[in-house]
Length: 313
Image (tube, rainbow, N blue to C red; front, side, top):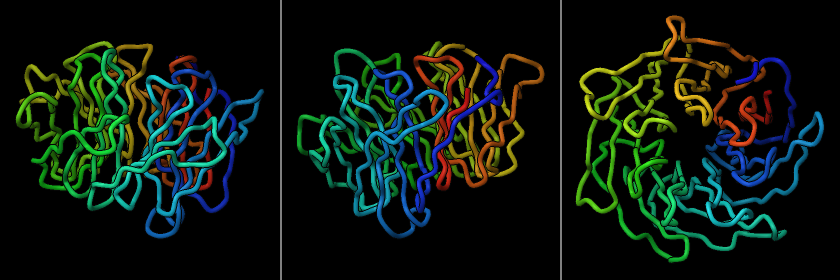
């Protein structure tokens, strides 16, 4: 991984607070950002599609929605299609080849839809969403209604993410302090991990180990979990001074990950080292809520915060 603090580009969009960022799996340097006005408490939302041009970032397209947008995911079978999740409980399907949208709206969650993810495993085109109504829902984008609803969490669901290894398997992180693993073909939850003594705001799967996940929580810690033995975390990473909003494993290195926090920082870690904190980047001047690592460039990271979309190299 290159030095994240070595350089960067930024774009400011007035009046918006960024909640999520995701690089395109098709276009190097292109990313989508989900944003909301007034910290998502009131006002509208915007999907911004950005691209790096030389040393800067340009806005390719933007789409407005009548409530805040909290998460975004790219389609795995169409380079122009994205799905966002919104404060009104709905999911929106967008086509960036078209000037207006959305193409479709799925409205079943009864509270904020806070997370959405498109499955990366071959042979299935499935989407999972997580909501403050304490449910996760399974969707086929070609079908106008959910295929299944997953219940069991006793608090807000902040994060839902598919396993990149196991078809039909996803993890969810919740305000009930648990990380849960689900199989879409099984009747109930597969595994419940009491991962923190605080709300868990984010989770991610290791790209190189199908049994390893990481969680980030309000207690400012990151914890690694081996699904074969969940009595103790396999690593604990400390350094953030406020709640961890997003964590992502590197797509290029098995032991590297990045996290962002309400302490305005992005941090890079290698949990295999005695001193795991590699670098702290302080480009942002507000809560840093969204984070992604490029699949095309091993040194490229995108973070989002209030009014500010930054690309680090």
